[in-house]
Length: 386
Image (cartoon, rainbow, N blue to C red; front, side, top):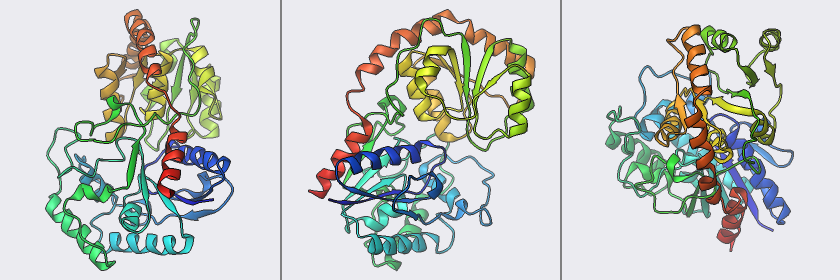
């Protein structure tokens, strides 16, 4: 029996935690012992659970909202606290102590760069995550994800990282992307969703999905909305939904009880808990979301057109990929009126060509899902244990 540390540092939403839970269940079934070390311990299953060290921006009292838009993964790490004096050195040291206490045989690092730095050369590491959260370590620099130049000089950031490594008795790295060095890596996404596909040498893993995704039913007539994240939904968003005249079903875990009651009184169906995607596929004609990778991938597999309203750089990249495939529409809702939003919704819902393209593309994507993502990860971890 191997002791497997499942570590998760960065990234919000339920995708990271649900994936680690599924990997842990598979490891347990295979006779191994998963130990969860996560930024959100409440999202982990019963068992051995430890609190992961938190980056400065994850601590509300130290968070400094960025006034500029990051262009590279280096910029994103700075926004999370990479340049906070002494922060990375402390993060590495904290992971060192966790590794010494837990004594894992192998580590799975889910968007966990400080863990990867701490574990490098000490214990085998499987780099996990979406393609966005697992940049290839072989790059010389982080490429721009927006087309804009980097906000921060990588030579300066590299000097900071190497100072933190030296403070912990570690060997400096030669380039900033080496932060993400792993023994093996598994980017769980279709290549179309990988902003680093031109540099990635390892094959892509199967998309991380909540279960089997059926094809959409022929009689679906609802607009299903899944929104998550702390960003405020403007009044025009809700008013536009009401004005659209469409059958609307919503799951938004950030809604208050009062908001849920108000939306139900307006004729919307509001789901308090996540519902199986099989039910979504059966009922829906059109999907609307914030652009989470798992949901967008499920839409492709089901053959459902989608509207994406992204709120951050990763979601904007996902929205761009879907629109490049001509299987969905990206919208911005910060400046539109309720009437404009309602008209846009009706226009997309009535687009028979978009629906036909989505249905026709589904078999292509489904044929590429030849393995189970969690099974792939568990098999690689067992291989690293030897």
